Length: 425
Image 1: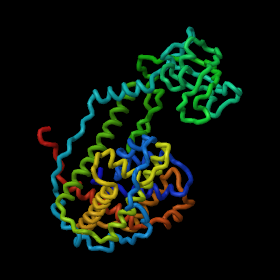
Image 2: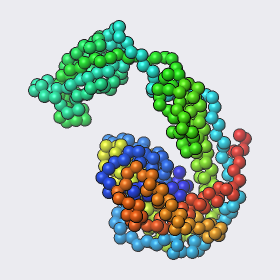
Image 3: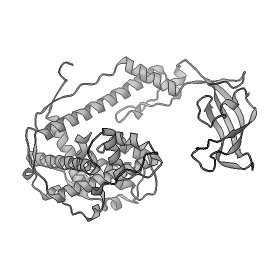
Image 4: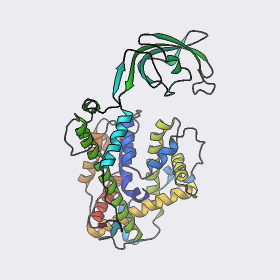
């Protein structure tokens, strides 16, 4: 995804700007930003970030004291002084057209059924391994009889044999009947994450509310009970609920086709951008311009670090994110060299976009910027600002002018490209 560093940077910056200083962790906003803006390779960072036991990674010196760096904008240079454009109109790229098969649909349907099976309540026998039981429970220290934090729940569903609870909890419920209350004398593991419970003897008092088993049959009622709606697939899809299995298969196919279309378009963007970049000859840009994109890259890295910190259970830094990317890619570069390559790629892309925009008369107006920012503000699920005007006053309009210019230029390049199927396919 490095090819699209320049183009994708703007999206995450506006999300970060909107949510800055709110004091709120908005998982939906963070997740959407991660999926839509991959210029720091969020997929790569996610895998490593999930390992909260990872040791502290080396600090990247280039990310320190950035506030002292002087910067300049694209508008302050003549882009043709720093890039010689090669062929950029009519480049030929090979991208395979995706195909969603019946097997793909059935595989997805099976996956949905496996993770959300219909349940049938059982009333004529005791709890068995594999059952799903609905329980109320209270956990207390064995020595004091005092309830401990996090040890009480009502109406909790538990699959017997899933090993979701500490040893002895689930097996201790086997043989109990609906309405029974069972005392489980258990011991938390010595290495349990909560220090106040590690190695402690406890008593769980558990009441069995119901027993259910998974059904092996897909039914129209099960499909309707999933609560799926075609409008969830994306813009342009009708507001129609899934009411039966036929609807569900149609819904799955539509979703897979939309995903395939998005992937195809993204692949076309990347291939066209890569082809155009490879046809260019670049000269070293002014240090102040490089600094501009270094600081923007750091803002993006900081945003991803804060987002992944929510999931990793530890505080992450920009340096951590870069080192995660290096680790996942298997790169031999140092953190500073890897970051320099990433920022250089971004800077060159912006210079190329600016040169094409100048050659083709592609412009971004103040109205374009306002429309973009207004839409971002209006659709944000959380924001630090009381009004659009307050938000607008805090942003650097040139960041968004450059980002929207990059988007317009890429659209132009793709529209004029020759996209063909890979040879032999």
